[in-house]
Structures are given as structure tokens and as C-alpha cells.
Amino acid sequence: MSAAAASAVAFLMRTLLCPRRPLSGVSSTVYGLHLPAVKLHTTKPIMQFSQEDFEKAKDQLKLLKDDPGNEVKLKLYALFKQATEGPCNIPKPGVLDFVNKAKWDAWNSLGTLPQESARQKYIELVSSLVSAQSSEANGTPPGSKSDYETLLVTTKDNITKIVLNRPKVKNAINKKMYNEIIEALEEAAKDDSVITVITGSGDYYSSGNDLNNYANIPTDNIEEEAKKSAQNLKNFVDHFIDFPKPLIAVVNGPAVGISVTLLGLFDIVYATDRATFHTPFSNLGLSPEGCSSYTFPKIMGLAKAAEVLLFNKKLTAAEACSQGLVTEVFPDNAFQKEVWIRLKEYASLPRNSLTVSKQLLRSMDKDKLHEVNSQECVCLQERWTSDECLNAVVSFFQKKSKL
Image 1 (cartoon, rainbow, N blue to C red):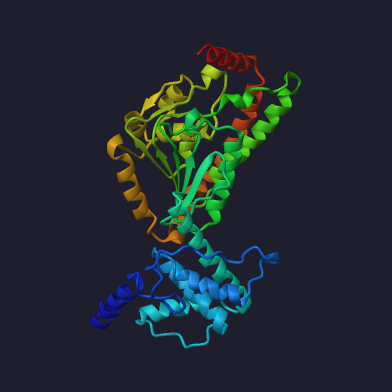
Image 2: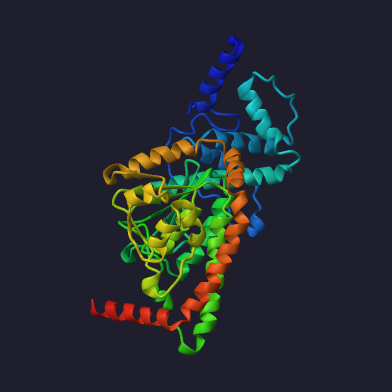
């Protein structure tokens, strides 16, 4: 690297990475004050924003105490310039003028976006930053989405984190959680995060299907309910097969049933050393799901997969790792710290490169996985209406009532 280039890089690092050095349209006091946020007028019909709202957004930006990051600051700069001056109207800076080139690229990327639209997007972005700061001050994780009943979903540091949040029932997956995981995956697929992580709240990763899903089903409607459940399960697993970004499981405790079988569709699986992996399908008169009838033999070999899927063998974390189902096992007392350090490093990698690379890795298997998923759901639909399964479920509830 030439001396000029090295000097330019150093200047870029000082300018963009210093939290107190603003871009145009971003105040130099952005991170200094801890004042209450002023509510923006964001409830107007069809979300029309006035010049007064725009001025208030600029003032709100001065109240932020945390650095929103270089990417966000460039967005703020570009939207501010577009809102106040229109489309980019200055010559493109030289290739070694890194700072001004980054600013020019951000502004120019908005093309002919109308000034009013840019003003609206600027106000909305500032509002989201203020909202995140306010949530953090109130003890809610920044970026959290509060419209989930069974999950905690946050986006921070380029990571979308989906936490199964029914700790009182060991994160058993009920019908509501199935639907909310689908919704969370759809949102994560479209957001700006680089990787998506699924983990559990409390001591369990997940105890699998909540058997209360089978309670209170009228005996004259079992076949229709089984058909509907099979369709829902197929849709649920399809979302894992088709998820475009790196998907990582952080298995914080025991995992049972579908929470185990889905692991073959993740890109990385990290586990604490106290985690266990159990798929007791035969005990319940059921058959494998989550594409495990294909992924498990491919990952661990046919004989080992048969022990797990046919004969209900419970694997320790070390065994699951040695057989390839788990990527790496960590001591429980250091699990969260070590794993999240690593995940934050992954999240700093180029998003599009990771997405394209994942698609290449998965492209050969994707059609096969969808075929397997369909076959498994057809088989499960039959199993759910079988005497074996119905008797097993009845036995489960009888044992539960005696506890």
C-alpha cells in the first residue's frame, strides 16, 4: 500500500469510527446528552411528515447517547442531503478520498428518491434509534420486537436473535410459538442483520412439541386436525430449509424432539456441555420430522442415526459433537461469553457474501429437503391418527395428572 493510501485509510478510520465525529446532518453532540426523547408526530394519517417533524428529528438525533454505527450514520447523512438538496449533485470524489467517497456513494445510491420521501425515511430512522434507546433505558433489549407472546426477538450488532421464551414449560413449542417462529424467520430474512441465532430462555433449549397441542381435539375431528397440523408443520420446516442467511443454533440446555431434528438444517450448532439431544418418536408412536430422516444419516451415518431416531437414544453434547450434529461444545460456565464473542465476529463479515455462499452450499440439497419434508409430514399425518400415537398421548396425560 502506498503512503498516500495508508494515510487515507488512517484518516477514514479516525473519521468514521470516532463516535464524536459527525457526518453532515448528524450533530456533533449526538452522543453527549442523556435527555428524555421528544415524541415525533408519527401517527398522522398515511404517515405524512411536516417540516416541523423533520426539524424535531434533527433535534432528537442530538439526544442519542450511543453511537449507531457507521452504516446508520451514512444512511442518516444520505437521507438528510436528499431531503434538503435533492439527488446527489456533486462530483464523485477520488478513489483514495475514502470518507467523502463513502458519503457520496450513500447519497448517490438514493437516486431520484423524492425529497419528501427522503425526509420521511430520515424521520422514521431517527425515531427507530430513539425508540431503541428508550427501550434499553427501560430494561428492554434494544431492537426488541414486543409483539411476540412466546419469543424474545432482538436485532443488535448485525445479529437477529430469536429466543424461545416459555421457560416455565421448558420452552415447549405450542401452536402459537410455531406461528411466531415462522413470522420471526420471515422478518429476519428481510432485515439488515448478517446472521440469525436461535436459542432458549432458562435452563432448556426446548422440550420439543407441547403435547397440549393434542388436547381438546374432538374425536370426530382428528383426521382434519391431523391434516391441518401436517400442513402447518410442512410450512414451518420449509422456512428453515429456505432461510437465506447463516442460521446458528445456540443450544443452552437439553433439546427434545423437533428442536433436535431441525438442527440438521442449521449452518452451525453450538452447545453447552450440559445439553442433551433426545428424539423419543417411537415412544410416542410417531415418526421423524424436520428432515431428520435425511439429514441425520447424512451427518452421522445410518447406524448412528437409527440409534437416535428409531431407538430413542439420548445423546450427550460430546456425543452429538463427535457424530457431527453439533459443531462445538463449550463449558457451561463460559458458554454464553465465548459463543457470543464468536458470533459477533461472524456478524462483522460481509452480509451478501455470506448469503451467496450459503446458497451455494445448500443449493444441491434444497429440492431434496423439500421432498423429504413433504414425505415426513404425510407419514406424521397418518401417525397422528393411529391407535399407537393416540394411546401414547393419553398415557402421557395420565402420567402427568399423577405428578
